[in-house]
Image 1 (cartoon, rainbow, N blue to C red):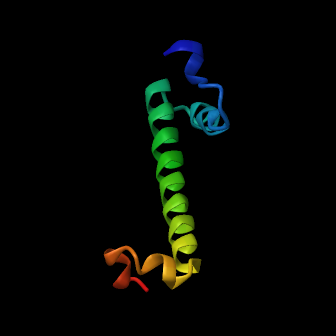
Image 2: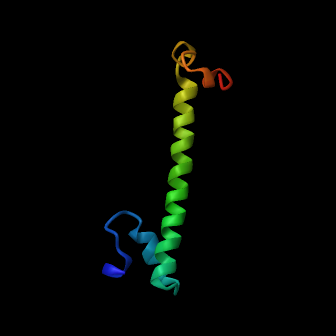
Length: 70
């Protein structure tokens, strides 16, 4: 890996933690990406559903699939 696993983003701290616990570089980077990407996707889905639930039914009624949700 180039630059010791540092990708230049905020997840470097998590990668550094895994490296400090004795994991090799590949495991540390993979674990970091798995944890952060999964968390990001879950949060994004929750925010999207909250936005959709907050929308007026007059906008959602135009899309057939949303009739089951609202």
